[in-house]
Length: 169
Image 1: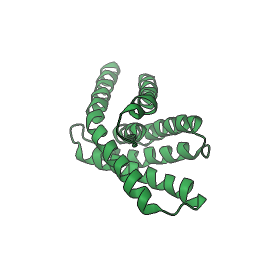
Image 2: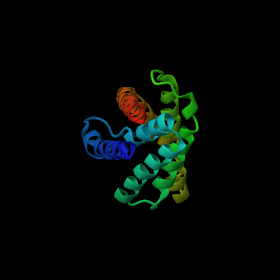
Image 3: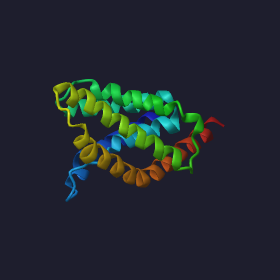
Image 4: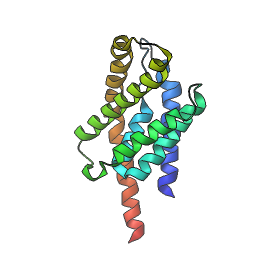
């Protein structure tokens, strides 16, 4: 139950930050994808099931607030959470390399699927422009923000595991 409440609070916090705080940063058109950071870290730290739950919840919030294809983000983020959860066995708390690679690849997959299903299907063929000016800056900005948020997420994860192990003994 604690895991569910903490995940729900993190989802709401990251969504509010992504939707309200980061768009207010001056001199940038690109917003880091905080929800991808949360989905990737949840799947990577907690496993497939938790990654799918957090991914679906994050995608559902995005679907509710956007006027795109309803359910697209829910399925995409759930899939990304599941794929990150498959690497749960390779999770080491203090290692930043594998989570950074997973966050970058997750954001890249998310951006490419978004381009393919929401732009290319509407005959917008300028992939070079979209990749150079939208995808690449977003992936880099998301990685830079992930370096800040990942240690906070693993501190929360370590606290939950410590409490969980203490309750079970």
